[in-house]
Image (cartoon, rainbow, N blue to C red; front, side, top):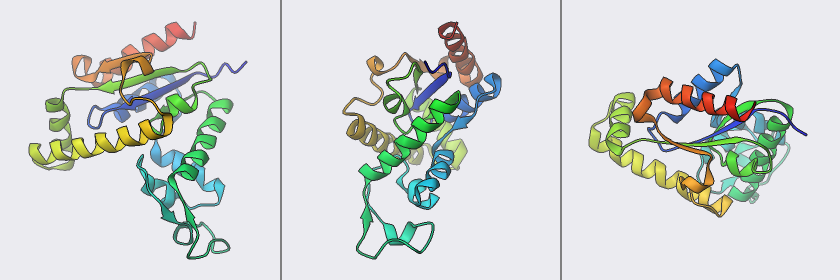
Length: 201
């Protein structure tokens, strides 16, 4: 039986999910796999990282000839679709999870690793709090931040629901759903760690 300790973090945009995941990883000494790192690992499939980075938890179709890591493959009329990208990234995530403990951020990792004993967490926060965080981070107005949040959340929801046939952010899909504004970034990370340690006893 695989005894690796896996935490999957789903998050609303601007909720601080990635910062919380990084803090969890730092405190527990676990590697963090977010979109960028997963994309680099996916290069082993023969595609360049740009192909996976550009997917960014969204559904789309890309020309293989533009993104192959080497020029040996692909003709202008060859394409790779979102289903194939998801399959490749799923294999990468499963491969990592079977080899070592880890914290995964996004990419439907809770669904992909559903047959493993993971701690699945979804992080949310009030729109006002998220808008303030995004406004500060991107140096945009609150109104612009709200527009960005709406677009990002819709993209993540569409991506998750399409590939999992589930409902992104629905409490029944996760072991924990947490409002990060209640305890803050570090407090939320500490709460998740406490639950994880209890689960791993």
